Length: 285
Image (cartoon, rainbow, N blue to C red):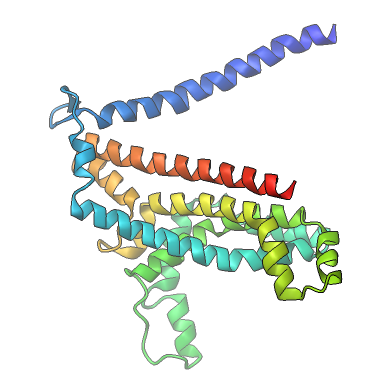
């Protein structure tokens, strides 16, 4: 009787999940792929014939420079998040359980506020007459305000501010699963703290590092509103190019092609992450 009641529920859940994936994930991406191979039309945005001109346009040195600069800023953001997030996650895994819950709660509280609002708040802090400059001047550390806004550094600060939790949480997860007996065995065998860190802790936490890198690197290339608010016109990301092509230039095929390339890059990183995770698991076994 119970099994008979559970079967329709399972069927309904599967239909709901697959329907959601079909209409809200697969179909929109299929439409973007279709738009990327169409011809630009000023009247209807896209039209026949089918062409690969949008993908050829991506090889334009102007857009290639934007992509490389975007990759550089995303890589710097990922590196800063890793440098901050790795010791933070390690320390977080060592505190008592009750404090861990509180610290994790404080870590995710900013997600309750829209990221656009938080970026504008950061702009107020970095402004010429903002909180940071006023604090530094009141302490006598600087004599005149620093020009922090509309720079590459401001964009990286904004990206780190928004994406740091996505680095910390997967690292915290692997540190929670880190076995203390392996660390004690390493010390018993004569390894010092540095050797234990390099040869034991880093390999065991590498899946968390790769997961954090994947969760930070690609989103950092697509958060177009951060350069718009903090960086000015000289610090564009790939997301800015895609947004401008769809909304300003009305070149939908090129915007769709850039979106596809970004999506394929993300898929490649996910595949590399799974492959490296499987390889680490095989070596551990």
